[in-house]
Image 1: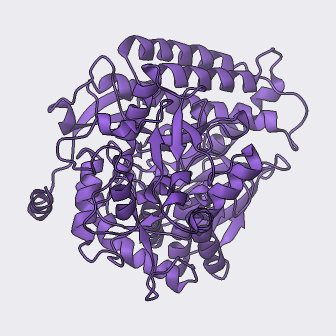
Image 2 (image 1 turned 180 degrees about the vertical axis):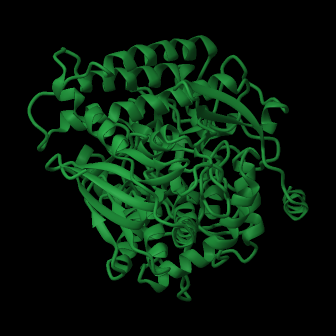
Length: 603
């Protein structure tokens, strides 16, 4: 132990995005000593890329909104696979968390009478997304950081957790390394909160940043926690597919929320071809009524471009597969048409979507006020994650908590746009609060030196091997195979092939070698990320094989319809005593009588 620096905290938070910062703030406010570990620099968390807004039933634009409507929308969007208690807590508490951000200094866009402005978004019945132009996530991170730096939180930037430490059945801390210098560190903690985000880097085309390698999912799984809903990977319908300089970069749903329409290569608005029975959009190609809706006209009908993300993504794929797509395998998203509706339409687009305008102008030479964007589905969000208690966010390993995208339960089979940011602050707060309570109520755990030494040996193995296996090549092959075999459209034969590929890549990853030393070595970082990527890829594929139906973001070409019996169970992933990955089924948690009544009323 003498050769490793040891740091002691009551609560260790892993991840410095919205959920991690909010958890750290809440735990620190409870009076316990808090450590915050960030894989990248503070302020670079992927939360800054969230553009459209934070969903909360403030009812500032439409007074018919309320937590009950938000709850019903979330459950319907999640195909009733959500944990109803989590959906309830989220809908009830999101308005207070947004007002809290405002009190801490967040500068939201405003209505004419000075209240927080809210915009329409896919799957939400009323305008519900509080926003700061199309830079909402950036403003959220700025606000949380500015508030958090005064609370005495110990921040460890550019550190990666290699493994979690346990004392018997409970969490005892974490073993990490400094990415800059390669020095190992032992974090001794009574409670650990995982807030590490998603898994997008397991796929070839993704909107996710480089940090999203499934770290929290994998750490929890190997520490003995169960994972839930791993088959539900959301493919955002509108990521850029051309030019190559911007491939995978997200085009926020706010573009469609402000009036953007989807067209195929013939210029036709194809979203009218597949309309759910309970949905009444404006008449086909009637852009005027859709425009009135996006501007807050209560009597106008919602445009079909604002259907749920899974539905829009499949409609885009239908156009592409049937030969009506754009030249590079996507479709066209057009916001420029609204210039004809407003005397200063170009300025309107620049004011409402400033990041979109400047980003694509600078990176791709595309002026969204004058020409359409070429878009298609991109791996975006993981609904599945660590199986947590809805009230406390604790996993089934005592002392291990999870919040945000690496926790499961809130979103069910499909997340609604904007619910991710409110998820971060609602359950980040709860995770920090209850982790602090756990730390106060329990004595300090014991650090097992043998666990630390084993993790250190494992981390250094890539330097000691003499093979030609390149970790970058292994990662690229995994991304290609997951995209092709376990992507937006799935079938049994291809997923079984994917499992064979993953097993082969596991063997190769165990032989991956890196050159040089521990300082400033991105090859080493990639080699250590491989275990996490392979773990989450296997979990996704096994869960997707087990769910023999199509529901939400999970689409089986060989089981294209919903199955009522399948819809009653969550798929659970656990690590067996022998180290294998087991798959089981558990009943979807039941709704209370009050919540059932809300669903019936909202239908």
